[in-house]
Image 1 (cartoon, one colour):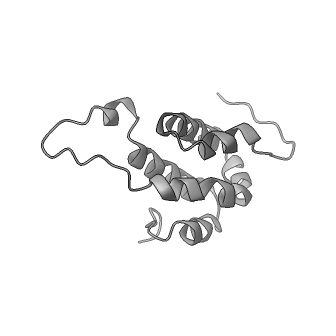
Image 2 (spheres, one colour):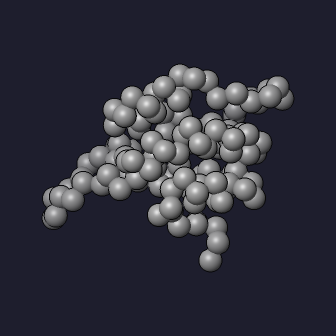
Image 3 (cartoon, one colour):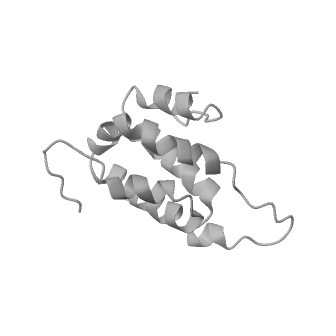
Length: 119
């Protein structure tokens, strides 16, 4: 169970710096941390919305980075290291937990994103 403090939320600079390294392994770990953070409490998703302008541009760069292996097996999916899938999962969590303005902000920064909530 995650404990949430009611103080104002500030995204640590280390998370932003980790995303800006543009190293796929570091980005994958940071995305898993962000996913855990968003699912930790109902209010954290909405508190992250003002940080979308710092978080989402790096995600936009790597959103389509899925390996085309043909008929080979991609073991990174099982290990949770496939960056394209991790980004898609993170964006869906941001949208579902981010409140009513989340989709608009995500769509502004990542034009190819399709809503997982709207039909």
